[in-house]
Length: 274
Image (cartoon, rainbow, N blue to C red; front, side, top):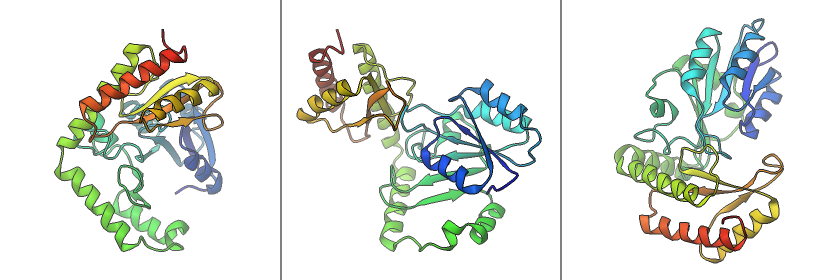
């Protein structure tokens, strides 16, 4: 997609795999402050000498649970003649009325030039994909080493992925339940005094700060039947250690109330809540 003489512009909180891809490509890459459109425009305005410019963002940011500001990114991409690539790893089957990802979430269509995704998160299989126009896909089939020099998906993995996409397409009620559950859990945590940062999705960070407190809270809730993972430095900046919750469509309202009760009691026991 990009090489020497091209420019890739990335959000500071883009996934590590995107950063690695930039470095391997040989292209120049610059970053802008997280979801800060003034910062993005400064980078674009100071990079007019590049003919080929690609803005790469996470549709949903895995550590914070917030959504890329696609309407403004799209406006700036048009203004400065740049293309947009969105990593939909945490957005497909998660955001949008029917789970179709970031464009549906904002009511936009055709503004993302390249959709990149995985088959190992909401889609419980292995592998990944790129989606775009026919010319782009044909070009990548003939030039992408990762595609040319790798084996195809095992048939069982492809079948699992296909069946999962069919569930998303045919059972929209799951998406409604997922969004309802995410809202219930996030608002419940916030009402207690926990910070869920800027999350607007069912991927909900619970910001703690100190590593020791984060691990203690993780153990306390785990002992009462809550499976949740700690996210610690160096995966995130120092002082922003957190737990990361993944709310499911299959959780009942009672499940979420019970989890909230456990988090409230554990937080008070550790002095994290008053």
